[in-house]
Image (cartoon, rainbow, N blue to C red; front, top):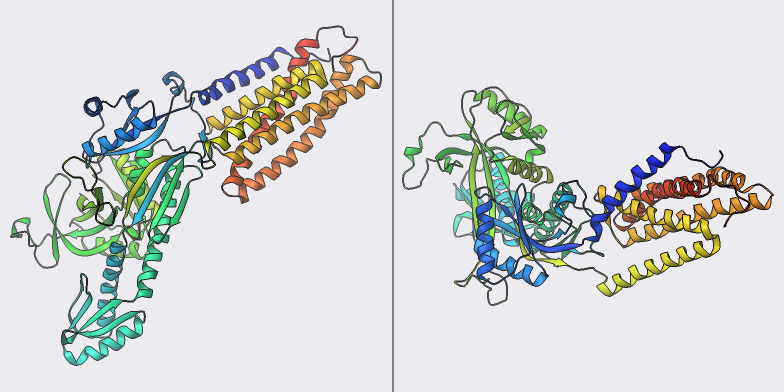
Length: 626
């Protein structure tokens, strides 16, 4: 029979459409405003925390919709954003320093569907909104770090010219003081520094053997500009590592950076990763002196007292072998011998040669990995409210964390690869590797504002946009129904399945849908209808030529197929080019267009043919309702 599908083709259609409908279904449930709480290295997220959070919210009469634990966080849902923001402020004050608290949007998908990996697709900031961070670069610290680099450069330059000095130190609020051993060398040192560092202001200071070096306005401006640009680059790298689609990272003013994360799920982890200023340094353990020789907290010359993670003191030499700046790659993994998490590092050529030389000379001695991080929290008053200075700037308490992660014995000569052990868990290993891969921040940054953001075009415009899509879609359905009658019904059913499959694929791949993406969907609808129009007009032509209804159906689908394939393949090539060379909204348009082309090919040809065969295949026909 010409118009008869074998049973297995119907099974293929059903096997695609039913899962497609299932995986598209989560998108109708929407989102709940929520709070996500993640633990730091010294705190665990468990049932005790959930009970503590619940009791805190109940005491403040803030209703919660639900609370649930996952692998590494606690997620609390609320009925509205007002309750969400009140709970955030309350829990931040309650859990400050122990946990990371962040606002988020949590999918309202039933848990049984989520367990089958059925999740809603992401929506971009122009449709759904997301999380907004306003970050401020610590310019004072950026200048201080630059001055420390100048101190090291001055020492190297003076040593190279054999100009002996007593000290080169950075004096807060004054500048860099260079104190020479002999007053007669001061002019020579001044000429040297002016020649090598022409942007700095150098003047005699205090006595005949000292110089005062200050940063000029141009130099300060350049340092601040570099700090913002470097931090923006590092933030983009960190966001890419987290896996947020189509983020926004923009400079605001001279010292602030706006970060918008559309549709982000793990906002607590995003907040922790973006704001951290973690660095690593590798130093030798001072085995010539014991910890007991440290009197009154003063370590022997050339050494410094640190603490291990378990609180034990350890004495390290001050000379840094290499630091995080020398790391070109980092990967978290599990040690096959011990089963504990590790981070494998790859060093650049300079650090690799230095590591090889020093480890070769110190086999049997210990080498330590020091983890440093600057933590900044809002300063709270006795009532738990944030405090501000006279200019309205939020006051913050800063503290530095320095701890020795591991101090293993050097068993063999190492090269450009090194492995960090002694980590608390897989999450810490993964986050540390991410930070090292993304690159260090040029200066610490503070999250001064955090909020969820609504659609950038306004809810009214979004509603009108969706309404226009619905009206357009409805008019297409009505036209097909009136103009092609029964065959129009088949086309409309296939068109609905096409949209369902398109949404299902976007959801499965966790793609981000934006307004340009909706434009791609609308174009896909038009192309899907266009394919059916070609087929149906071909059937009409065959009927006018005197062919039988069954022969006309068979010829219409067979002869229109080549034209449909040519049109869709050329459009798919254009969409691929747009995706490869476009950015942002253009990529969003290309993604939905590409997926829509593939799904429309299936529904416009195979699904409509199946419906036609099912309805007409076994009938003796004298005419067709087309």
